[in-house]
Image (cartoon, rainbow, N blue to C red; front, side):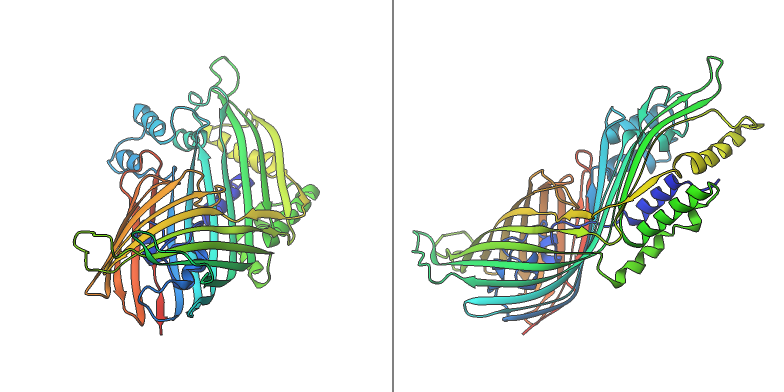
Length: 501
């Protein structure tokens, strides 16, 4: 069977659906519930709370980090509970079992959508220096973002195939994908507002206020935004008519660079000869040719503030003689946007396809061979394209609030966050994180945490490693225990090589 544009688009979506990013994670913050607003320091604070460049958490003034990375994925489509219940137990996915599986996964309506996002983030190099009353940093980061969604109708098509009983009435069959890849260089600055005299409170002394900002230059590499909407109806011919497929569809693909040029070349060739083959003109792997030059540029900004105080006078059992430091922080991260304008184009099609066979179907299998030819030549392959001014991507902005309490070797933390949009792992559903770290023997951090709300069900996390004053090598991981309500998520992060002096 020939590969239609529709199938090629699905392959293109699948090839990029492993990556996405919103909030910044390192091995410590991921292990402690994916927060960090009031305790992540060094160059990582550029992306979480720049004011924390001023934090002195018993570490040397200078930090250099190499190859820190994190991977995280999740969303309502990743319902591991339903997957394990139906697809790992040897059940035959048919009849009532199939119906129950899709209802538990998507709900009762064929128009219900489920989403999947994922995270890949890497910081190749970061440097920070903390002075007496001000601090500086430079940090790089690479992000690849992906949002993918399908509706129940698409899942039904995958599970039932061209079943005339299932699709006897018009059924929505939709999916979408948005992919963005870019790099950034962030320059952070923070200082203590020592000219503001904050008096001691009845339980708090030595109160300090830090503020910070981290403007960043954005270098866009690639983007594509696909939106496919359709309705499908199948007549089995029981009333004496032919077996008929009716498909009303419209799709649009916004893209740039090499892929955009290839699709326009195919459109030109097809308009001249409708036997032109899609595979001869479009090769998704060629998108790497765009890496040599920026496809977009832009600017972003991260802002934050932290209030730090000594509350050693508070009598907390087991820690009465320990110094106790309370930090309360707020930040706004990822303000900004990119506009991808290199050979930007919009590919679109809108049609009503009705197929009753080619008239020479000696066998039932021939019907589907001819159907494939019709889809290739007459439906999805007939699209229009036009040059556009560009594709704008808004960064996954977030508001973050956090508090941390350090008591000797124990660190407790609370974080609250909410996204300003739904890009990447962002969510307009509030997220609350709780985390703890205990430094066994002073240099083995044992970390645990949990996160509730946001883009998936409640997640649990943990981490461990070695954290000396001069060197850190730690890992963190998170996972969802019960994915039935809002889907699953999973993540892992590695500190890379972190040196301090």
